[in-house]
Structure formats: structure tokens, C-alpha cells
Image 1 (cartoon, one colour):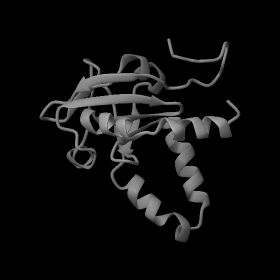
Image 2 (cartoon, helix red, strand yellow; image 1 turned 90 degrees about the vertical axis):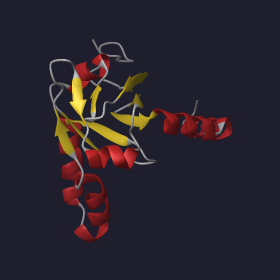
Image 3 (spheres, helix red, strand yellow; image 1 turned 180 degrees about the vertical axis):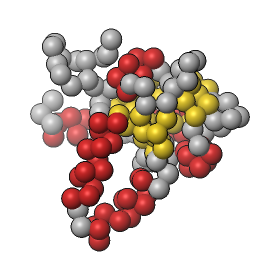
Length: 151
């Protein structure tokens, strides 16, 4: 069962915050609620702000197709950033996924991690980095964005 915010909706939205740990081999449990949406395999790559981005295979293919439609001169740096370290992961029988050393280094993942739902994708954060990010967020900025959206 997913956390779909609309009755009878066809699109599943990712939300929530889940605390986990990552072991020395780079294995971590992936939240059961999110696994139900992501399925038996999905893509993990570098995200922005020092986290990892997690895409469903469907959303990953959509991203690849959109990037392919752009001239290489406009998209090559984004391609290098996102695609060079992307990896397909498959949860094992215990529900753990393996995060590569390069991705762990990029996101500073050592022990305590937080997985968050972010509408159409998930993010994996080092817990302290996530807490620092939240502390740096300005309520005024959020209010300004909500106002722009008409809320």
C-alpha cells in the first residue's frame, strides 16, 4: 500500500522520513513503504545538496529520454554528474540495498542515514547533513514558495 494523497489516483507520491543505518559494506535497509512504490529494482545516483537521489525505473527512463532530447552542449555536465555514478540496486531478502563507495563518499554516508520521500523521487541523506539542511531552511522561504503556488 502506498501513501497516495488523492483518492483513486494513478500517480503515487513519495513522502515521509525514515531513519536507518548503513553498515561498513554499504548496505542499508530501504523503507518498506517506499519499496512498495519503487519495486524490485531502482536507480540510485548523486543528487543535489549532498544527498543521493533515488528514481523508479520508469522515472529514470523518462529522465534519460528528456536528456537525450537536449543538445549535448546543453546537457553534458548534467549527464556527467548524474549518469556517471548511477547504479541500479535491488533489495536483498532482508530489504537492504548496496550503496557504492563512490556514492557513500559523495553523500557522506557513514552510519546514520535518513531516507525521505520527495513527491516523485526519494533522497538518501547522512542524518547530520539532513538535520543541518533542515535547520538552515527558512520558514519565510517556504511561506514565499507556498504563496507563489497559491496556498
